[in-house]
Length: 125
Image 1 (cartoon, rainbow, N blue to C red):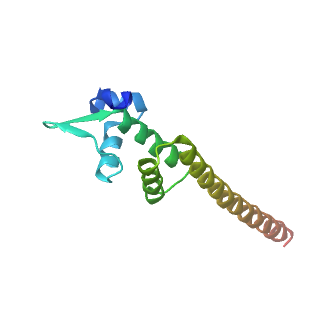
Image 2: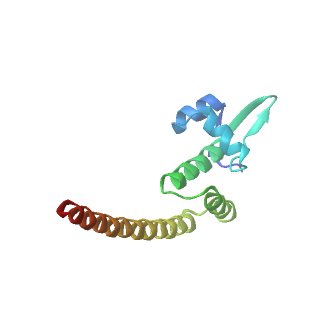
Image 3: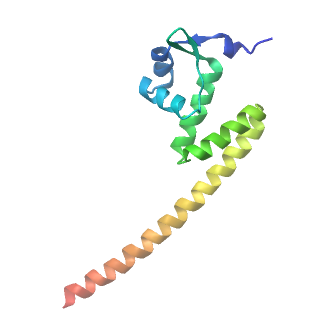
């Protein structure tokens, strides 16, 4: 029995509107092999599953994942469609990205402090 999400089909414009992206964005991720809409003649047809995958792609881009990381995440989605495994992996990736951004913020704060000290010293000269 097919998943009810797979029974709902959308053309590229309808899919783009539902996702809040452009048709060009959908074609980009298709070209990268991250989504694989069916074709009816020359028309791309997106299932509910395709839209769910695009939702995961967009979420991954929002948190700063690379296309390679998103592809790995989607492989997990294909292997284990249970939300618990996906959520755990997404949480781990979020933690890694938070750690990276916090390290970057700390480095920026340190650089700003050094630049302020130099600026103050230059004002005294």
